[in-house]
Each structure stands twice: as C-alpha cells, then as structure tokens.
Amino acid sequence: MPRSILKVVAVIIALCAVAGFVLGLQGTPDRGRLPGQVEPGADGASVDAPDAKPLIEEAPPPPPPEEKKKDEEVKKDEVDPDAIPTLPVAPPTTAPTKPGAPEDRVGDLLDGVTPPPQEDPPH
Image (cartoon, rainbow, N blue to C red):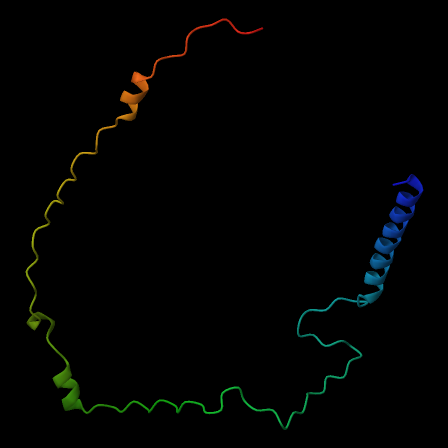
C-alpha cells in the first residue's frame, strides 16, 4: 500500500481515539458519588407500581411456635449420661502392605542400547 494511504488511515484512527476520549470525559458526572447516594438535583421520589406482582406467588406458612414441654415430659427426656452404654473399641490394626512395585525395566533397556559410533564431526 502506498505511504499516503497509510498516513490517512493512521490519522483517521488517531482522530477516532481522541474523539472517544473527549466524549468519555464529557459523559462523566461532575462529582463522583457512592452507590445508594442520590444526586443533589435529582428527585428522590419512590416509584409507584400498583401492578407489580411478587416473584413467588405463595409464601410458605410460618413455622408453628414451639410448645413448652411440661416439667414431667422434660424429666422423661433427660437421660443420665452415665447410663448411656458405650461400645467397645477395637484396637487399631495395621494396614496390609502393598506388594512390591514391579521391576523397573527401563534401565535394562537403556543399558542394552549400543552407543553411536564415534566419528569426527562433518565440518
């Protein structure tokens, strides 16, 4: 491609980059704000949506309140910790050893390879 066309394309690309930067600066607000903050000049009125529906039509019923047990029932539910039977614990056993790893035959194969003949380099 001729140099003049390359220069024209380079100028167009540079103009687009500068224009994008300037438009980006013009689109920013004058002062930054945190999420949830309302702009000083904006109206903070809430949105009224009478036709809005919940995402879940039927909410599950609340759990029933816990009933207090009578003193007699509480005493029946309590158990003496010494009366709980314990299970006998077996002594730990050693795990069976794995059989030996198979023999490594790669070394035998490498020993059996004949080295290349010693020749003088070609140069």
